[in-house]
Amino acid sequence: MPDLKTLQAQIMAAIAAAEAAQDEAALEAVRVTLLGKKGLIAARLAGLGTMPPDERKEHGVAANLDKEKATEVVAARHAVLKEAALEARLKAEIADVTLPVRSHGIEAGRIHPVSQVMDELAVIFADMGFAIAEGPDIETDDYNFTKLNFPPDHPARDMHDTFFFNPGADGARKVLRTHTSPVQVRTMLTQKPPIRVICPGRTYRCDSDQTHTPMFHQVEGLVIDRSAHLGHLKWILEESCKAFFEVPDVKMRFRPSYFPFTEPSMEVDIQCSCKGGEMRFGEGKDWLEILGCGMVHPNVLRNCGLDPGIYQGFAWGMGIDRIAMLKYGMPDLRAFFEADIRWLNHYGFRPLDIPSLIGGLSER
Ligand code: DAH
Image (cartoon, rainbow, N blue to C red; front, side, top):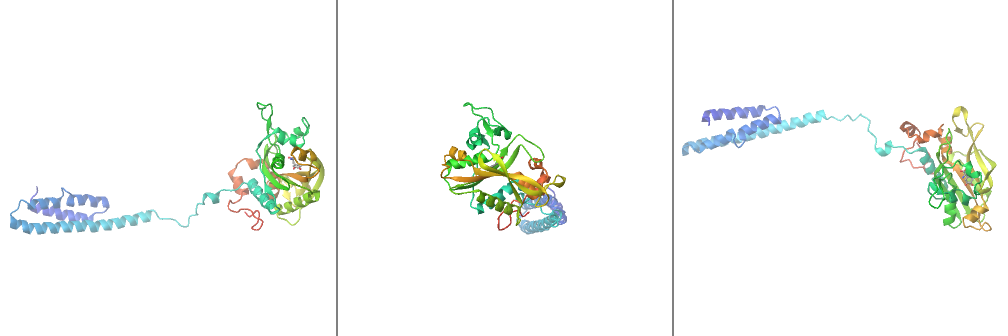
């Protein structure tokens, strides 16, 4: 063990080192040297045991003063260094409040125009007292064709470029529904008139160009009661189109047509301009076919368990993608299904801006 003088000098030097320590690690090293179990102060106190009693008294007081001083110095320096370290950290971690805030997932995401248009239609028709009905994408041949008055092997079945599944065990082949009209069948089979439903959903046909994709969307409308007639149909179509396009007037053209499930049948065109490949609504000399409609054929009513002597009604089927293109000026239908994030950012809708008749259908 070093002699008392040396020990004393070492203690003083260590206290000075503690006072001068530049960081917490250096201070901790000095603390261990000074105040650790085998440190200088411990040595100094241990030395007292070998002294004669009167010397011990005198050195004991001095040793304890040293211990107190060492403890105080270390604690004070520790407080200073801790404060400085915090200061340095705050400086390093400085937050630039002028940086743009990264938006929350729900604000960054966009609603696809097709979903938006479906929501808009739901709002418009709910206001007219229509409920929403749904059916499966994989449909039986019976519901997609037969119950809708397509005779077996009738060329009208080919009209639809149907995707057929391989025949099942019972020999019947299912189809990817070619239109939303089978949901009419499902509704009439399960509900009692009066019926007022719209049926939005996916439909499939083997077809692809600027205005056709193999998967597309339709919304079917069906009204059945004892006296529903073409005048009602025309009014509903005109009013819903005005509401949808958010204009006071829409130019529509009703042309005679043929569908197996309606009699009489009509196709409806809407005025637009198709200049330069881009369709614009409410201007120009062109017409775009947007829907088929008519009075529900008595055979269809009968096939669905309704007595055509009592009930009558009308139906229509409209291409959702087409009216979305028209309303929002989107030139190519195929882009709808390419999942290009830039397209979606441009044409998509903010998720929290839910369409309503009061708040506006299509605020962006
Ligand atoms: N299902 C027809 C189609 O996809 C559209 C249609 C026409 C639906 C007349 C109807 C209707 O409900 O009455 O071509």
